[in-house]
Image (tube, rainbow, N blue to C red; front, side):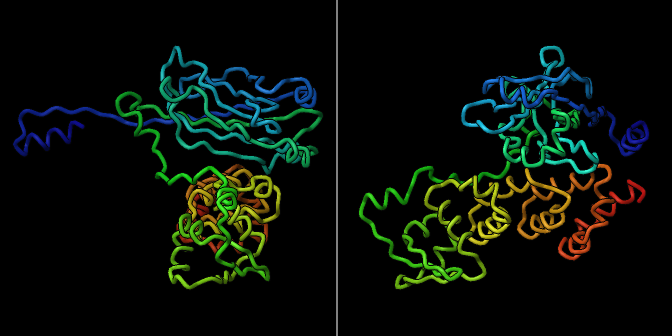
Amino acid sequence: MSAVLSALRSAGRRQLSASTAGVRQATGSHVFRIDTYAQARRTMPKGWKMSSSTFSVGGHDWRVECYPNGDWQEHDGSISLYLNHASHSKTGDAIAEFRFCILNQVDWEEPSWTRFSGVRLFSDTTDRSWGWADFVKHENLEEEKDLYVKDDCLAVLCDVTVTAGMPTDDHAEAATPKPEAVAAAPHFDLHAELVSNNQKPDVLIEVGGETLAVHRRVLEARSPVFKADLSEGATTVLRVDDMDADVCKALLWFIYSGTPDMNQLETADTMAERLLVAADRYKLEELKQICADALRRRIRMSSVGTTLALAERHSCPELREACMQYISFPGNLKALMATDGFEQMKTDCSSALLELVLKQMVRLEL
């Protein structure tokens, strides 16, 4: 700094002052073991939580909170996980990002059900706890309990990165950038409304060997692409190529109801991937985001390569970042390189993504 000031004074600036600001980050991890998991599931009511011991990262104390049967009635059938800023009354606001994952207790290599928070502000004006109400469904965990519930014990890994030096008062919003606003879908059943008003379908969609009857005004109102396809008023039959009939039905379900069939999205093979492609094609941004979130919850070693390529092709930055963070988990990159999917990923992904992968290779000294 002194050299800078000397140079500026030499240039004629006499009344001169200076200050310095910077950003520091500290990262720590905590494993929260839940013994007698089955008993907790059986005996704890909805809304009851189990809390980890406090752990310190970046000068702040934190606590993992787990609701074995969900935090609210609508989340029955799921485990809810939150990170609580335990020292808020002493240390004030905190800016942090975190990751939760349920550990594979057999080979310890491939974590499952991983979620990344992005940057969050822990404060009285936002929230002192952040997390996910539907972190993992009981039925999905049950399917792989031999890997993730060993000796009736569930192990949750929490990685926390705390950022210091960023503003948390007048400019707090700058630390928690908001995603670009997306127009909310109408949350009512358009199909029921049209039927009650005796409005019959006036367009037929031919897709995957099936014919679906739909309402022109609904398609035009919800999708600019459908609106363009139907711009010629005489069009009564619309042919949709390169799409399966079940995907088109799921797309229409969302267009009419404003919500996707989450059970189908979470359980049907490849539905989330195919529906994301369809949502992007027809400019349904909310549905596209919902599909991307579903895929983030299901990142596995067997799918991360194809999911990364999908995120790149269809401009899903949060899904892309989740894949890259998954790959950076110790041991995952080496395991990924040994799969057939890695060669395909190098073909499908952009040079920027490959550069990130190569940086990880250098860091891990593979």
